[in-house]
Length: 320
Image 1 (spheres, rainbow, N blue to C red):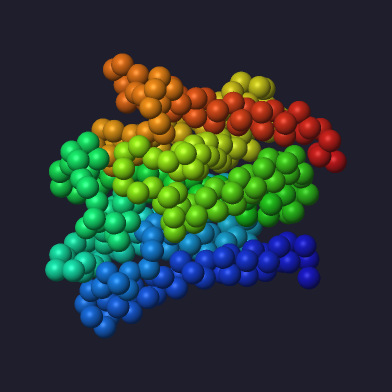
Image 2 (cartoon, one colour):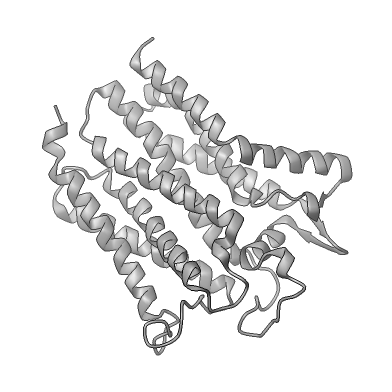
């Protein structure tokens, strides 16, 4: 068996094992829909949106790996990513249109997902609501900005890893090796944080001001999110001049981090979660961001710059 075939077999088996739980969640919802015509709240698997569609998208991309690498050649990553995004959005929209029942309230699955993101259902009845803390107005698709942003970054990064290593094996060119290793590490780290957030929501209790441990995890999440996107961009400019290989990916990292803040701001009706009180944590005049938020955005870009500089400066050593 050739090295490529071994890699392909390992990739297929690995992605199927890793996707078992989200695929199982999706099947459970389908079974409930077939049996009852709806999904009961107590039977709802956590965060079927967006992780079941993400899993389907990645599985399709990996299954098509030999075909796209052979026929799409240098456009294999682009083709696989486009197909994955199509699979994701089609399956995502189909699942979002399913119906869920919570007590006597009927709502679409997408609306239920949004409320789960904001405050755990078990705290819903006991929560002391204030205007600044609640989602004001009717449900809007804009609430899904952060879900879609997370999904797109994960799909881009994971597909890049599988196809990047596959092309490296086929072409016997190791110029992107370190970039792909960094991409793999941060993709796994970011996915791990996403899964952890699914089951803990980073320990938020529905208040606009979160605890210290929540603040740490949220900052880490935002930074890793941006760096994962930045490394993706940087992996395609290995060996280019520093403006393209280091600066541009770092800008991407910071901009993507800002997108996540925008998603949170939309979800919270123009507000952001606060990590404390005082100058460092209070919003600056005229904008919703606090100094700590700006530091998080800058940290994302700076960390990405250091990583991209590392795998670019050592490129000559891995070309052989």
